[in-house]
Image (cartoon, rainbow, N blue to C red; front, side, top):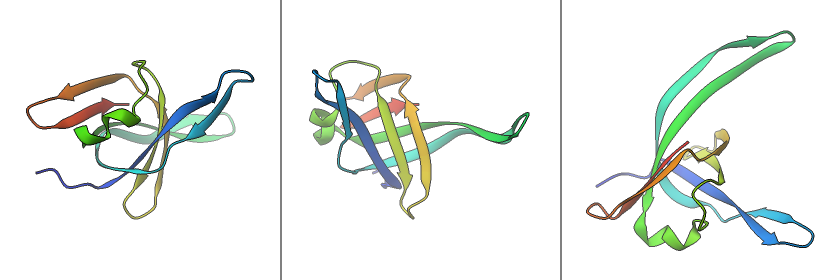
Amino acid sequence: MILDSGYIEIKQIVSEQPLKFEWSDKIKCHINTSTHNNRGTYRDGKFIASSYIIFMDMSDKDELPKRQLFRVRLTSNIGEDLGDFETQRVEYLDLRQRIKIIV
C-alpha cells in the first residue's frame, strides 16, 4: 500500500476558441522526490532544480488528458507548493492499480 503524501492538479483545456486552460481539482497522490538541487544561480538570483515521481490511483485515470505530455501542479500534504511541471512520462501500473507520472 502506498500512502498519499500530497496532491496533484492537472492543467486542462476548457475551451478551444479562444484557447483557455483551468486547473483540475486536487487529487491525492504519493510524491517521491527524484532530485532536488537548490544550488542553481543566475545573475540576479537563485533557482531550484527538482524532479518528482508521482503515484496516483488508477481510479483517477479519467482525470488525465489523452495526450502524453501535459502540465501538473504539485502540493505537499502540509500545503507546501512544490511547483508546476511538464510531464516527462506516464506509465500505467496495472498490477498495482496505480499510475506513475515522472516530472
